[in-house]
Length: 230
Ligand SMILES: *[C@@H]1O[C@H](CO)[C@@H](O)[C@H](O)[C@H]1NC(C)=O
Ligand SMILES: *[C@@H]1O[C@H](CO)[C@@H](O)[C@H](O)[C@H]1NC(C)=O
Ligand SMILES: [Cu+2]
Image (cartoon, rainbow, N blue to C red):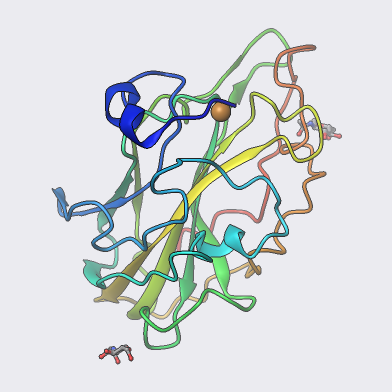
């Protein structure tokens, strides 16, 4: 862990050890600006992660800010990105979840068994000779809004899970945020499996409590449900 002060944030934003937030939604290649379509998270200054997987902050990390955002229109089947405020330097994985906001993404708090996974970036293993993490050091998470997702308002919750200190329980670090979108031109798919967040993780999953260095993991199981691609 490394503390990054408010003043140091700008100068260290590009360094591999700096922490990060996920403040920007990109639709049709256009970034809307930080915390415009993404709810401002508690750590917008500190950049510190969530480590207690049972915390209410696992949902959208807004217990202090109580933030909502402006809802952006996105077409079903289109490519969307969540952009971090710098490279996500910690070795780790990526998951993106969505949840039906019941008609209003501004008023929905993310509660209930409504979240489904739409994208992930697992590590690459080869039976124990090496492990690499395509989800590390990137600053943009790009995924497709499933074509058959019903039209309506949703939260998109992206998380980068840092695993460099995950060999002990509670050592995995969650960098996360929630964007508000209105999906248009959707279909009649039924997203599944549906999970609650918090609730989806116990912290004891083989992919969350793991020593990624020694011995080199021969395989890796992504935490959480399977991806629903529509
Ligand atoms: C969602 O709720 C907010 C706050 O009550 C309201 O301003 C907005 O118009 C609502 N949006 C929709 C689509 O109903
Ligand atoms: C690797 O696979 C074994 C056997 O299925 C499983 O028990 C173990 O948890 C997996 N390891 C990880 C890190 O997912
Ligand atoms: Cu750290």
